[in-house]
Length: 223
Image 1 (cartoon, one colour):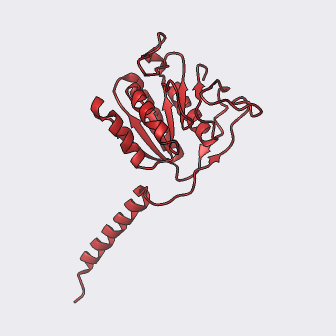
Image 2 (cartoon, one colour):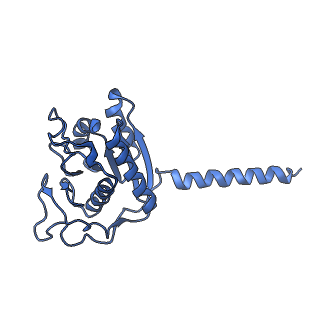
Image 3 (cartoon, one colour):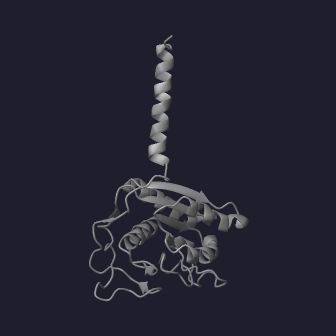
């Protein structure tokens, strides 16, 4: 006996929905190694003398504008804390992901005891890049990142005191939190986390990672 047409239609719709979700959301499936679409402009770095590990570079404003990730780039936004700076950074990452059609997932640390576990949850997703927003994450990242050198991290609005080659940071006067008991810079200013600077920081940082300019601090006083 054949099932009613209505039941067949319902089953087909459910199957289509399931297939759509799995194809869009299943990060366990292999995907192409991400590449940089476009190249860094003049003034981002001196190609003849690439920056040394842990160096601070000051790229020319806009020298990163021609770079975007290839299709299928997988990014986890790792965030902790609240307040204006964190809100501005999170908004910038989400806006960038939407503009570039990036597959973005978010991990939010639920209080101090969840800081290190939140980094672990982000790692378990196997993204191409983990973007960190929030000073509370700096010390946990300093603990975890040296043990996962194959995973790229981008810290925005802060930096690690001694980053490994897989940790790139974007910082400026008014940010500059470094953790390890060093606390915030004397010039720390939440008002410096403008929408324009946060947006530029995300794009400059991603452009650096895509072009393998990693393990450095990108200084963006001028945007």
